[in-house]
Length: 272
Image (cartoon, rainbow, N blue to C red; front, side, top):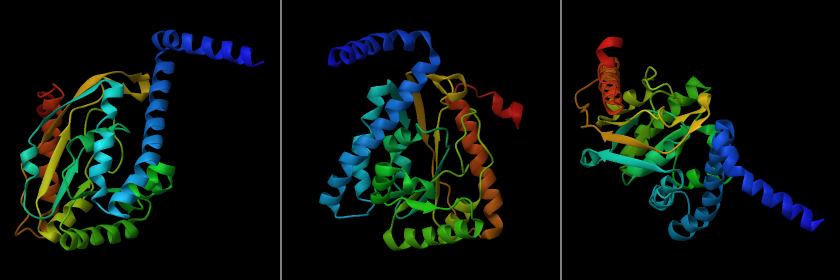
């Protein structure tokens, strides 16, 4: 019986590379499965380290998490080309906004995440096993996207947290993943917070993943991701009446940068 199982196991291991080459669906499923497994296992191993080093929930744990997650790119053949990191070097708090494409964004986030920066994430992530635990320990601010009143209360608390703890806050203003190679309209919550707290908005743009990652096409291969941290947009002196213009300005700037980084600069004018 044991020999039979060993033979079956050996046959599967031998066939996997062939199946991955012949079937994009198998290749995609195995790579995604390994991605999730990597996150769950590394989260389980990293959580005790965070507790021992920093004693509990704190943004300081992000340094440890960042160090671990930055190694994931080597497993998937991903390369990052980063420009503009000096634009994070602003005194005091800031709102960082970036485009949100897929589950791979976590690797991109950790590639450039500045110190003393917390993220705003959906509440459901809290219940994602060891991954939920590790992002809780990292100080992620959870928001209930299904409740408008709750979301507004959380964003109001974000403004207080920035001032009290002197931290930067990372927000995905599209509100959900978008793997189309374009931007969805921005929600205004983050920009209201920036104006309320009178802190700068720092846009971060990642090039489109569509050339190497597309779930609809079962595509997941190696690739290069260009990342650009844009100059801060000041909000001092702005009021709530200026939020819409601030949101539109940031959207236009980030969209033009997305197309440029993705090798499609002409599409900005064509689609505007």
